[in-house]
Length: 83
Image (cartoon, rainbow, N blue to C red; front, side, top):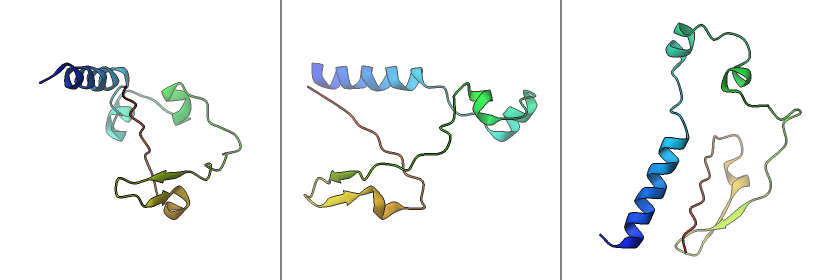
């Protein structure tokens, strides 16, 4: 394993340790968290909700992937930058 792969693994591990795992509904209920889920996560909701930008990404095969094609579905977009 070369230095580039090691840097990648360290970065991924750092990201995994930075973001806590989501709690299950049972765990949240057992902890006594009630009310606004945004307040429980200590984040502010965007009011009113804003539509996502018209994002277009290029796939590895050269085709374009448009965020609008997934309207009504949950989409997770992750960006990984390397040097």
